[in-house]
Length: 354
Image (cartoon, rainbow, N blue to C red):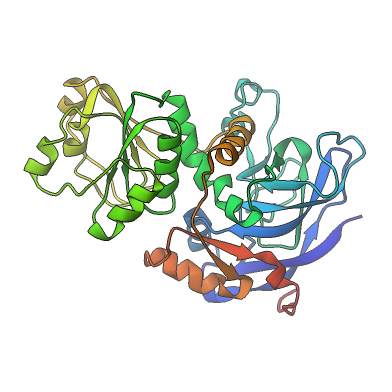
């Protein structure tokens, strides 16, 4: 039997149109896990989906979900009631294509089912983590290690895997020289991961105000590169540059910072078209690439690595009612790294919409 729970739904694309609604959750299937949601992080992609939402369409965002197992289906053996768990960007895939079989469910040939605003294979529309509970197929549920606080762990489900995955893919480790561009919600995790992997880490920032914080997070160096002379000091310095910033770049200057066979990887969406000269790729046989989150296996690996190495997102806790204001602050770059919602705060809020 389906159940209805409270969810914070937005109609259309105006942040002021958020309100508490009743959201339908499916009946528990044999391979399902029901989760009592404790916390949900806010990611910029939540905001982007809301901004392009069609008038009259309801969306319940949230894809950085942590909570406690409430019940399990009779075929579930790897989770039990009371376990600390998480759910990230997607909740279903075909499991049969070459990408699913190799652990890259995000590239599923049938089309991965995203945790919110997506159509599942049975035709049902998915609702995200701004709700009291969620029911998810067990293979898409992640174990949260006991040493990770559930609130702090929330941003790892998207921001964490977004930065961890490319560093692993390009074998970053001892002896690697890595630059992290931007020290925000993504960048502050990229610094911690690269440092924990043994790399020499330089943060390329734009403000002296973040220099000391970068060092505390594990950066060996903090540089502000503005002039051609500034850039020349770092020509052929880095094996890997992780771009976590959304600002437009002088790509040619940054490509010259790479060693031969170096890689510039984008993990954030830059709003405008980026241009560069191919000569700056040929000169060092450099590459430009992007990274798209990570599969379930590597996400679990990232959570375990974070627990082992003491990697912790820096968060600001808010209540459900604060979400519209938080969205605007993120757009205005006024958040200190990541917002996390205390989802228990929805319990006493009245239902406003059908």
